[in-house]
Length: 111
Image (tube, rainbow, N blue to C red):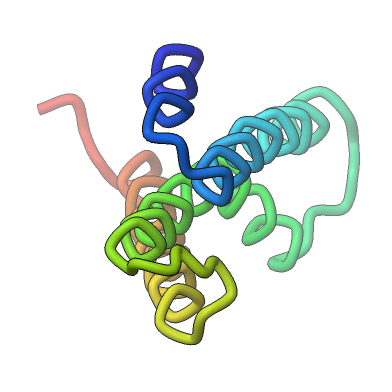
């Protein structure tokens, strides 16, 4: 993440730097949430699972899609409707990817 952060900073787009910074923070939150489930007896709801999956995987894809939208526009408005749609698209793709990956962990064999 450090190298990616430096490269994004060199682009010179503050909204994009903020997006990547949020991804780094989200990843930490996701790791903490996953650790809590592994090492403590906690209730784990669907909402908890989706939040953890967002922080660990979907946040990165959401930010990448959002950054592409922001950087493709001359005004670089991170709050533009199109940019927000790209963010949501990335989040949904990321969640879908994580759900499939988790299912494969349970059903796949070593073959």
